[in-house]
Image (tube, rainbow, N blue to C red; front, side, top):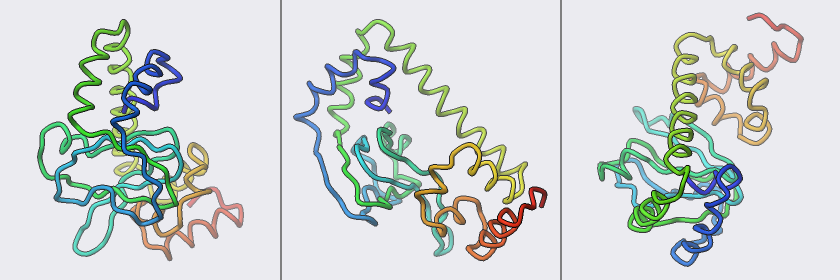
Amino acid sequence: MLFHFRHKFPQLNAYWDKYLPFQQRLEIPPKTILLEEGKRSQYYIYIEKGLIRTFFNKNGEDITVQFFFENEGLSSFDSFINNVPSPITIETIEPSVVYLLAKEHVNQLLDDLSHEPGFVHMILQMTVQRQTHYINEFVSFIRDTPEQRYQNLVNERPHIIQRVPQHYIASYLGVSKVHLSRIKAKLAKGKSHF
């Protein structure tokens, strides 16, 4: 949410240093659950190294919602802000190095930053960027075929294709692993229309 904007808002660097003692640095293996669906989120997570996914369980099946990479931050924000049970699980996919900042320190940080010129504008930009991304994902899921969604990943976010295991990509696209294999086979044969 915040620290991954340090390159756009250099004033954050001083706050990173100030709040570093309050952050818990974890080196964790793949498949580490950082927040379980149904639990209340108490931490903002910043990813220094690694890959994280968010997902929910539907009738015993994991449905992947989003992927997060180095220099990105996340939490189950509704849970974090409103102290309600999280609708998602947050789990590492790769060995990862993350920083956890407790809610009380996030609130202090936001209070400190509210006095910085340009902070409100940065928060608005960040919120609009995230909201636009999620709206585009939502519209694509309704409008586009799984083949088109996969092609969009290849064209717009190839790092997901390169790093994320195929079964998670299939879940993210809303298809089975077998269907994803067929999509990839068609693309490999040069069939651009499905």
